[in-house]
Length: 77
Image 1 (cartoon, rainbow, N blue to C red):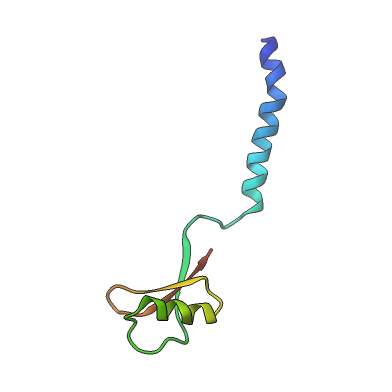
Image 2 (image 1 turned 90 degrees about the vertical axis):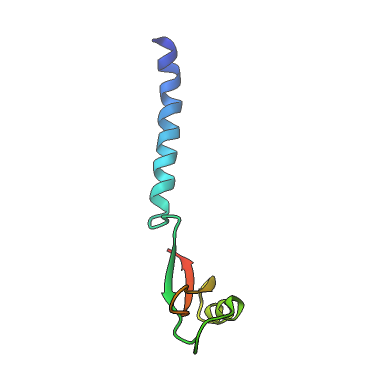
C-alpha cells in the first residue's frame, strides 16, 4: 500500500498530461479533410497537376477522384 502512495502522484501527472495534450488539439482526428478544387478545369488525369492547383488554393495536397475524375484538394482537419 505504501508503494501505491509513492506512485499515485506520478500516475496522476501523466494522466493530466495526456488529457491536456488531447484538449490542445481539438478536431485532429487523423483523417484529412477533402473538397473539390474551385480552380481546376477539365478531367483530372495527372495527380501532380491537381496537387499544384490545390497548393495555389492553400491546400496541402491534391488527388484525382476515382470515378468522376474531379480534382480533390486535401488539408488536415
